[in-house]
Image (cartoon, rainbow, N blue to C red):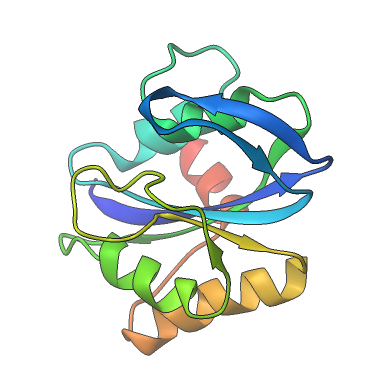
Length: 147
């Protein structure tokens, strides 16, 4: 199963985090959207993000291993079409980009976008999918796929 996804991440407390080659930076309290794709293994990729037991491989792994950070929701699409960059570009217009995060394999400025408000964050992600006329699902639907 192939697709693209947006992790809705809650950072409960501001903290300084070292993120691989990007280096050390302050990640503010609030909500972040991480936009990614899994064009070979959508279900295993999402499961990996939800797991606490993983080898640090991607920028997002550094953020997720912080004990004041948790995934609140996942909004994703099942599709052959890779849409992570177009989603990131739409979402970034309404939030604050964390420069160079998660986009080392494309020309985007960032694939991690900060929002201070959870509802506005989630609404922006949904509008990004709707803007591209893409059906999307959430974490509850994902959990039903695992059964």
